[in-house]
Length: 345
Image (tube, rainbow, N blue to C red):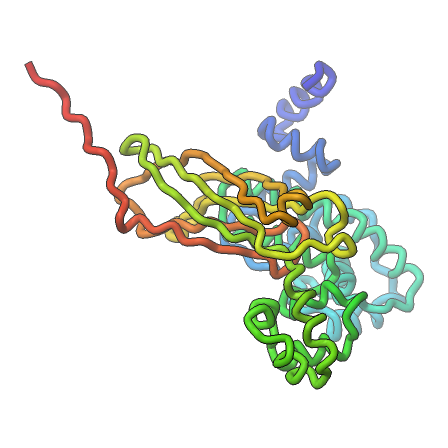
């Protein structure tokens, strides 16, 4: 950090605008102003907040404070609220944060707008909202809140992909798969997991198109999924070494995945306390996927007694919806080293 940035941080902390160096880095990295940081600190107090509450926080960001409510927009905002919003909107259409909330959800729902002013405002909102969600995600990840980290990462992808996570992940291939076929997959609840277990011929029968069965199964195999094996080794009674062997379990397509890499977030969480004990950003290259090359991650986490029954290893794509893997780490057969008794003379 250079001297100029340090001087800014000293001034902001003096006036209690930013409480920590970590907050300062989030603010500067994501170009978030200090008023929004204050709003986040005030409202991000519950580690089990739902998606509606998270979008409400985003809608209150100071970055949107200059937007206005216009009388000629109210009828269209009402229609958008009733027809395009999947989540409750606090405040309704007659205040700025309610309007921002409706525009965020309408953007995800791919709503067609009529008002030129709403089109302009939606463009502005969605130039900023993903950046804000990504910042919130990193704030929560630093706090080691597992449930909220997962929800915010999912929310970022919902907005980026412009699709709700309640529909089939294969809608991410809507530019390649016919809409009617995707609707049939939804109606039959044929998720990528189910499709991969089925014979291509049976898929063709289910969607009433025998020719496309193999193609649909191939698209299901493009969703990035990781297979994770774990190995545990207690170093001391308070430190556990974990070795993860990570193997790509999906097919690479340059048309779908590009030519470089796929990115994931991997963390260890305790489902009883909702704490994350280790997290990292993990990158798989095209070559590693093509040749199914196992990758090794080794790290240590604290052992907290009484020992939990199990922890989870979560592997979540940074980009793709429906790309979540949960591996259970069981502690039932884990033998900890003996406690060292003090020597007595």
